[in-house]
Image 1 (cartoon, rainbow, N blue to C red):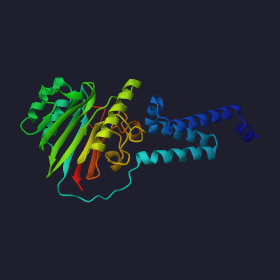
Image 2: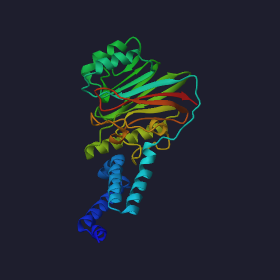
Image 3: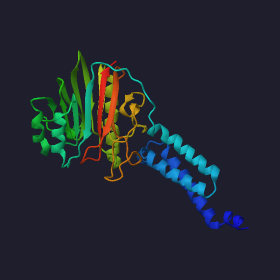
Image 4: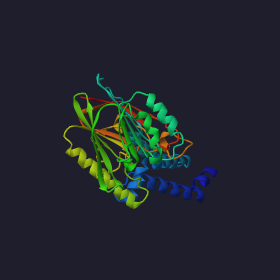
Length: 315
């Protein structure tokens, strides 16, 4: 009699309806196919939204809706798997390897001096710094004699807050402007062995407003078109402010850092930094002739982004 009462308890029925609706809404938002501003932003939070749905599924199990709870958890697991789990890869190792590091340092990073001193002594071929303040230009003087640089000379300025340092010859430098000095990207060419490697370096606006979202998409579309027109070896690198499952990420069929190894690079909270709390918005993308050999994603004190360190070679 008590069991029957518990099953028919109006409060339990109300909770079941609430959590069934919550799970349904979360799954619908996470996989929504729409491309307008709010839909794209919500789809970008797929990991976090599906984690909420998993919680709803667990509550449904506690409320003895076993089939619905299990189905919810399974659907969420199928959605989370591709963005959290990396399948093992076996890549051949080539002798001539190019080492690249990229990081959004944060304009107000108080540890930047120490970071640059450490990076000066590390081994790398190309170093990409984003959100680098013009006030910190003097910190780059320690690299003048050992690297080619774009963004150090005052005549160049630090376009879009980006500085690129190279220990291999940088033979071409261009600031591609889409909206004056407000929106654009860098196009650089390096001598890599006996070949030329083109690097497109960009930091689109964060899509916090609809205008920023539109500008981000315009810059990404311009980058995509530039890579399609590029005939030789190329890479795209930077904090692109987009997740790789967004419909506006146009390189899902290309070789990418995220495709090589799943990670989250943007961690908005100082405490509780783990994969379910972040977003993979820092990227490297490369042409078919370039092979991604390895990738490491590491913390960078004072920044809400992680550093991507990767090695590439020519196939």
